[in-house]
Image 1 (cartoon, helix red, strand yellow):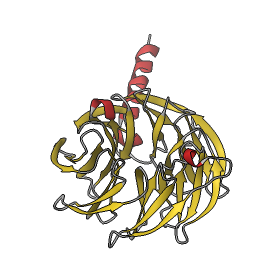
Image 2: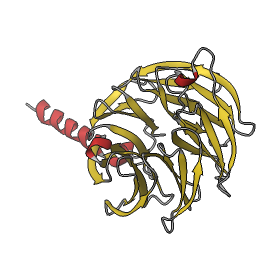
Image 3: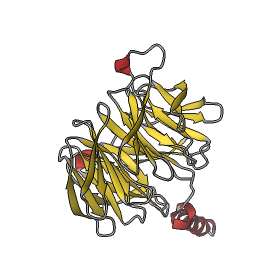
Length: 328
């Protein structure tokens, strides 16, 4: 007769412990992967890569970013025209913020008080006040904006226009466009060197990356990709990520099913590595030892050892995965 109350008390204590924010507020090691066709974010254990939980979100989740304090994960839900906020401790959506029409990518200001969202159908960028959860400004840009990145110092915002083959450079203090830079065919995503002196943008239908001088907004060079055995039309670079020292860039090549390893200083392609079908997103862990490549058509994530450039494993996730974020 005494066992049942004791079991209940233990169970209650365990549930309370699991619900405390300190348990998973930072550094859980979880790998979060958004899946466009499942309306969900898959949560993987960072060591075993087993599924911990599937979190339902709004329709067509795409880009994701973690808050600076590590407590929350923000997820674009494109078809619902909102950003869902996931509590990492609880692994559930706790809030939604309305944004513009057909949002895809976004980025935070360095202080985390605002984020900027590219709205493809609106041809606008929405400026969102995080605390208030509302739009405080809109910036008109070229047709089908997608890629968006705040400069390391927070003073400039870079936005791609896929239709205009252009990068817009925006002053974040005034929201005025400072420059319009013509790049390659259908520009998509950005990466920057740590000091912001170079801005790299992938050109999906150009099979290349354009390198922009972050100080004078002039084009400095181009990196072209030509993995063996693929037609030029199949080489469709989209995702890009740089190591924290700014020495190496990893570029996913879409339908070519590879990613490229690029030496940033020389802009030389050092190697092509085979991964899954339609290699799309790319994310590095904190110490740059592992690269996670999101494969949109094989519904998995390739985990790559960056020292050996060997794929350690392919992890099944949801249908049409878009972005991976690591909570480390």
